[in-house]
Length: 50
Image (tube, rainbow, N blue to C red; front, top):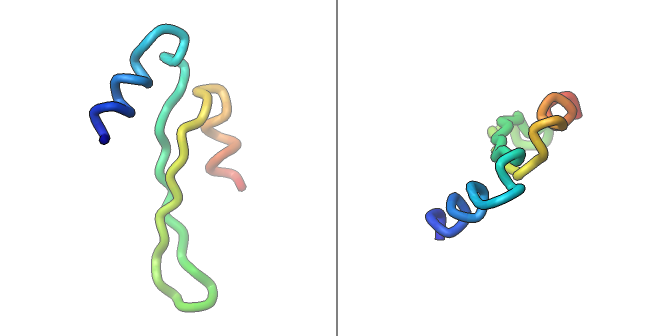
């Protein structure tokens, strides 16, 4: 399934999208959680600020 996502990101106008992964510590349990999302290349800094 990952190959299908990579192929989709490389086609046509989708070259401006990037997959970002953010690690956060849960305030309730103290365990680390990973949030991943496909965002526009212009909005990468906004993703990490929130």
